[in-house]
Image (cartoon, rainbow, N blue to C red):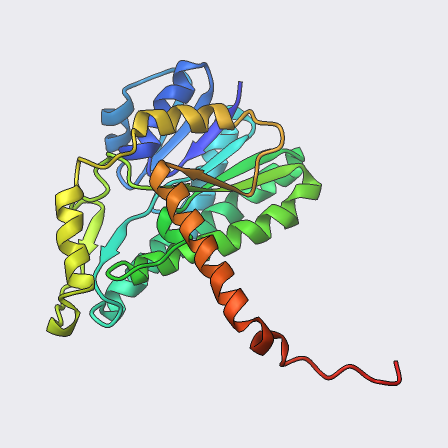
Length: 280
């Protein structure tokens, strides 16, 4: 039996993973901004602890972790799932929109992780699953601000992977592609309030495409939930877990593009070192 702590557990990936974890007999501390939304999504269960949590409030995060450990005695898996998206060109995003996105997607994840780590360090065990995105590996027009938050999650996860491995704590950043959840709905995806005509053929096109893609995405969220619940038992998990054929294709394309850049610019790139000392 494992004990999960899941943020954003009232819908989407979080709710699906919570249901499966409960079904297999695990304990689940499931959180959302409104506790009642967790109960509505998951019902009641002897192994379920529904908690209110705004991940942008570090004090509330610590309180929720204390409640989970008081109830279950430990936390084996932290699933940092809470987050939302923002569509629009980088210039179109207002400062308020950018700050709001970073407060949840980056600082919320960071605060939640710091709240759980003392528990896992004391246990000398645990794993952290940070939900990133295909946009955490490859950025594109119309999603620049959102992608930048997920790039930050990727960097934090890589560093934590190395910092925590000697303590028996595993960290994996999960990179889903487009999955058929409500993420492209207005409840999870905001659109910048400003619109600049010069970006109509780039960011503007992405806004239109996103609307058409809603609820016809190729990824099956139930399969993703099954994968991640089973993945919690993998003995040596990798630092990244790409999920979805579109994510795999995007990563392969970026690798090929970066390899081409290195091949073309290698001489210039290495020319900035100090010249070798001829005296040895």
